[in-house]
Amino acid sequence: MRRSMLFMPGNSAGMLLNADALGADSIILDLEDAVSPAEKDSARILVRNALKYLNYSNCEIIIRINSIDTEFWKSDLQEIIPLRPHMIMPPKINSAKDVQIVADYIKEIEEKHNIDNSTYIIPLIETALGVENAFEIAKSSDRVKAIFLGAEDLTADLRCKRTKKGDEIFYSRGRLVTAARAANIDVYDTPFTDVEDEEGLREDALFAKSLGFTGKAAISPRHLITINEVFSPTIEEIEYAREVMDIIKVAEEQGKGAISLHGKMIDAPIVTRARQTLEMAEQLGGVFNE
Image 1 (spheres, rainbow, N blue to C red):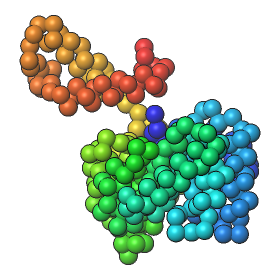
Image 2: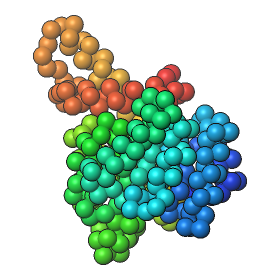
Image 3: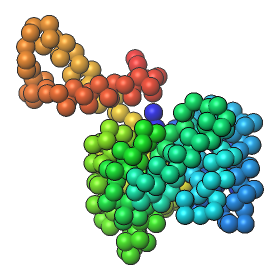
Image 4: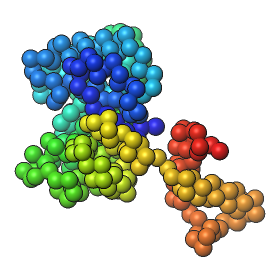
């Protein structure tokens, strides 16, 4: 389960120490934008040692490497892949070919270290070309388990202003969601960058969820509670899902091909959503299992 993803700079030893205690489902240790060129080597070693010596048992670990048009990305992978992170996030992915370049180099390192294919890829799509190629990127490799929208660089590429309302990325959001669902993978929304605006964050997260995003990234731990809440099923949704599964069971026992609940026909998409809701509720545990 990956509702929330928290970016953390890879050159901050103090933040790396407490990374898994902040409430994020996934932590993105950043070797790219958060790290100046002069600190790339030291950040890479710091992240490598964090993976080697710290026990990040409470969350998934994703490493954002430098883009393939820099001199740093191969060194990033050489140091990180032997430590078996859950996922690698290559930024500024424009095409399926870009993903394959990263995937091939990961495979080369894994073979060198006798590692089974275990590291997945979550391409960061943050250019106009990447948005237009979203489906090809989503289908480019078996390692790709999700795609991720990066709005800050995207709006710079689009030559428009990044706003809280987000009208300027509406098309890109829809394009990525459609591409991801067509490829049967997950899709994650860009961070909301105003740390102080809790109401704005909630509205933005709810809107992203309504479009079909699986979860949302954050740049501040303060945003995690809201994001986790928005992307978790509500009690009402879980109760309805249970009703759906119960009535489907009754329909099967009675040999009925169609059945209604609260005046609405229950079809295959409704059953699929109910099953997904209950699966997430089971993962969350606690009150949802009562």
